[in-house]
Length: 345
Image 1 (cartoon, rainbow, N blue to C red):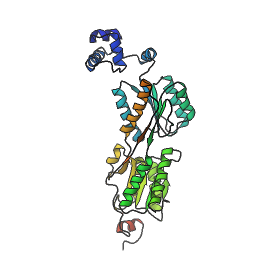
Image 2: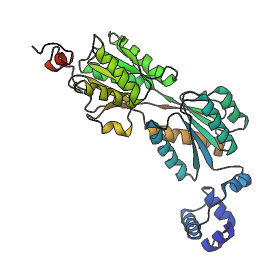
Image 3: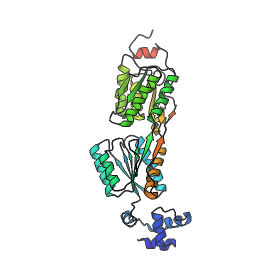
Image 4: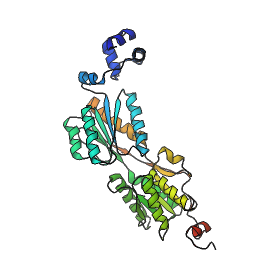
């Protein structure tokens, strides 16, 4: 099966078939549909390597993420791939698992496959590896860690505004004993969220000393929450660095017999799909994966196809209030006293 047979069946030139396969906007929708039907009928699978050699483009974008087990990233991958398919692009996905050695392998794969651009949605990219892409004139876009230049764009997330919104929310409900479960100190985004919590509490004239270290995973959230529950000064509200942490914290709270939000209010960050279905549904700061994917794709597409310079984009998270936050409980309530091992009267 070859491109000439597709052209014959679709009653078009081989050049038109080639343009359709490569996602050219010079083909009318009606013609494109006819070519696609011929491709499907003949079960023709274009040789992507040949396309890359002939056009200088692979029609392949790289997407590097940190942790495939965190629902935030698969949701980001889906959004990015949806947009890529609409533009006739394929996506090569690589998961680093926060491992520098694995990052090297990911970059090597991208270079071997001659990607047209790379979206680096991680916080641990080595500048030396970035230079590998730059030396080959491959456009890159970063998530909050890059510097805008000729072939490099950066998506800035206003993490601080998101955390501040959460602080405003719980203090507005009357909470003053507020704790924070932070993410790994090695991640810039996690450090920014922690610093924003401290700043928000300071602005309110409140003590920001109740901070426990997590790892952005359910296990870390569970362990950190367990430590907070054993503390002499138990918080009435807990903010977390991401939703996975909050879900772990939710489990630890339930295990002690306490209720959310009647005894402790809880809020996350990211708004992964699962957060709307926890019991109770999680109040969280929404960081739109669709918006990030759209910005990342636009930056690479415009740079690789149109020669546009690198740009900076900004994503502003928004607070989503659900059932896991509520008014501060009255001091000395029966449930809190029993959980603390004190008499109920």
